[in-house]
Amino acid sequence: MKAANYNEFGGSEVVKISEVDLPELKEGEVLIKIKAAGVNPVDAVIREGQYKDMMRHNFPIIPGWDMAGIVEERGHAARRFEVGDEVYAYARRPEIQWGTFAEYMVIPESYLASRPKSISWEEAAGIPLAGLTAYQSLYVAGNLKEGQKVLILGASGGVGSFAIQLAKVRGAEVLSVASEKNHHYMKSLGADHTIDYKNNDIGTAAKEIAPEGVDLIFDCTSGESLMQSIKALKPSGKLVSILNQGEEIDDEIDFQFVFVEPNSKQLDHYRQLVEEGKITVEVSKVFSIQEAPDALKQIQTLHTTGKIVIAPQTN
Ligand SMILES: NC(=O)c1ccc[n+]([C@@H]2O[C@H](COP(=O)([O-])OP(=O)(O)OC[C@H]3O[C@@H](n4cnc5c(N)ncnc54)[C@H](OP(=O)(O)O)[C@@H]3O)[C@@H](O)[C@H]2O)c1
Image 1 (cartoon, rainbow, N blue to C red):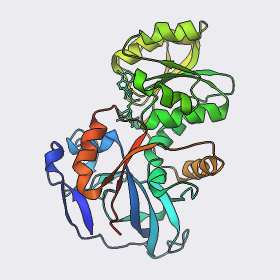
Image 2: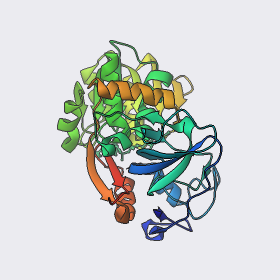
Image 3: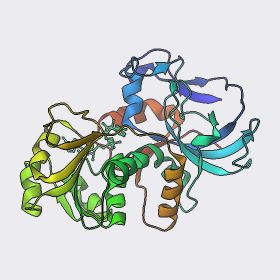
Image 4: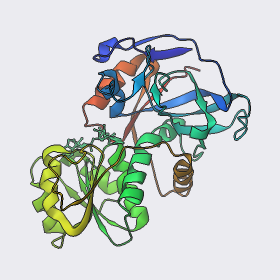
């Protein structure tokens, strides 16, 4: 099969597109024809070797943890899905090697959920990693409730776009932070208020909107933006970050770091929300498999609007 892959850690120049043999299909596994693969900042972080001491890896590495595709073949006892079923998955395995920027992948069926059929393959492939991150941060760690106020830092990106919509599904009031060019976009997703991090102290701006403070801060950017925002947190509020692991965070603050876990049940819930028209997916660009190095360059800017996706099939 054709796949983006690399044999050493480094910049986007280490990524080449070549023929790679598929692994053998084992018990409980399925072969998926990948129709689209979501691109996430972590794909570039891994390519640079930043996870090499945290997760086992084997070269050549095929990047990519998100996919939507078709079940082509089933291994022994893999019977949850039929051949031809349309599925999607956050395909992070315990070992880094077989990713989704490829024409096919072999994966245990437990990772899979039926994909939402009301949207395109590219839109479906944009959901799993970013969507689950927002879900596990707002609904599980943050326990967001109707009527609460949530401040989302980095709200126009992959994770933030889902976070705005999930917060509105819950009935929360959303204060969203990104540069001004993305304010119209964030409002279109349902954000009640927008804050430009470039021309404002975020915490001061948030307190002007919500003088009593916010119940939850969801941090998708960290750094100075996070530090500025903390003054807008209610004393009883919670801070959830997907980047900061507690560095420089006051012990008094109810704080939690979230590292997204694969969860096919939560993907089932996403399918429902999408099919009910409550969640949409903005795909700002689709790349071919040959353009995988460019997709990784784009995602590394940390200024992508919505999601970018690779479409590996040429037919
Ligand atoms: N722990 C986990 O499980 C987990 C899971 C997913 C992602 N992540 C990490 O979370 C981060 C966000 O992921 P993503 O996929 O949403 O990235 P993304 O699509 O690149 O989005 C980045 C967002 O941050 C905004 N932004 C950039 N600089 C900012 C600043 N100084 N202050 C406030 N907002 C700023 C961007 O808005 P503008 O374009 O307007 O600047 C954009 O809305 C990445 O670093 C990623 O690696 C962690």
